[in-house]
Image 1: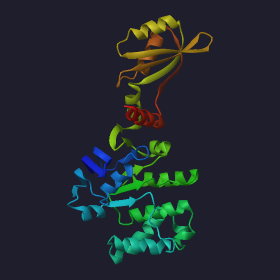
Image 2 (image 1 turned 120 degrees about the vertical axis):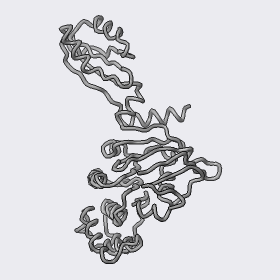
Image 3 (image 1 turned 45 degrees about the horizontal axis):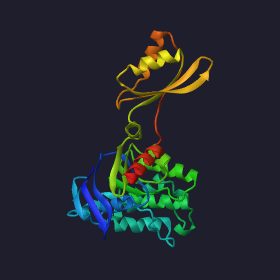
Image 4 (image 1 turned 180 degrees about the vertical axis):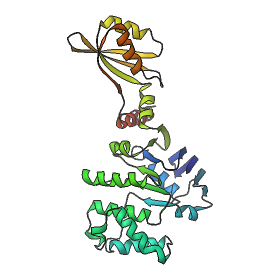
Length: 314
C-alpha cells in the first residue's frame, strides 16, 4: 500500500529525513517511533503531500508522489499533531464542511457524516460546538474528519497526546477498529500504546531508519537472540556444563538461588532458536525438576532506548 524509497528532506543544512526506505502492507497498523527531532512528523507530512521530498520515490496505493499528489490526498485521512479544528463550529457543521472540502457528493454527505459520528462515539456531542468539548472528544472529532471521505490510508500523528488514561484507551480502541479496514501509520511517544496497537514498528533516529519489525522480532535482534529463563532443582554444575556444550547457546547465566536446591538460569540463543522445548526435554531426561520456564522479551521502551542511544553514541 505504501512504498518509500531513499527519501531525503533537508531544512537548510539540517537533514530531517536521510535516505529513508520502508514499506507498509495493506491492512497493517505501523508504528512510527523516534526521539524528538528524529524526522517522524516530516515523514508524515511528505507522505500526505503537505511537504515535498528533496529526493527519493514514494508511492501510495499505486500512485506516485509528487506527480499524482491531488489524487493521493483523496486516498489519505490525516490527523496532524495539532488537531485542525474550528472551536466556533458545531461538530456536524464542521464535518459537513470537511466532507464538502473532500468532494463528497451532497446526496451521500449526511449519511456518511452520521456514520462517522456513530463510529467515533460522538452521538451525544454532535450538536455541540467544538469549543465546548473535552480534549478526548476533540480527538474523536479529529479522527472523524480524517475518515469522513472513507480513505484507504490513515496517517495519525500523536493521536492521543494530552489525553488521560481512559481517553487513551478509547482512542486506541477506535484506531484498532479502523485498522480492520484501513492501512494506518501511527506516531506516538507512548510506547506501551504502540506495542498494544501496532502490528509492526519502525524506529527513526536523526532521520535514519535504525530498527524495523514486530516488537518481538526487534527484542530478539536488540538482545542478540532469544532469552529464556528457567528454574531447576538440579546440580548446578551439571546443568551449566550441559548447556555450555550446546552450540546454539550463546550465553548462560546463573541468576541465583530460588529455593532449597533450586537455581535460576538464563540462556541466550541464536536469533531463531527457541530453547523452551529443549529445556523441558532435558529436564525429563536428566530427572531434573523444572519449576519455572519462560521466554523473556525486551519491552518496546528498552528496544527503543537501545537503538536510539546506541545510534547517537556511534
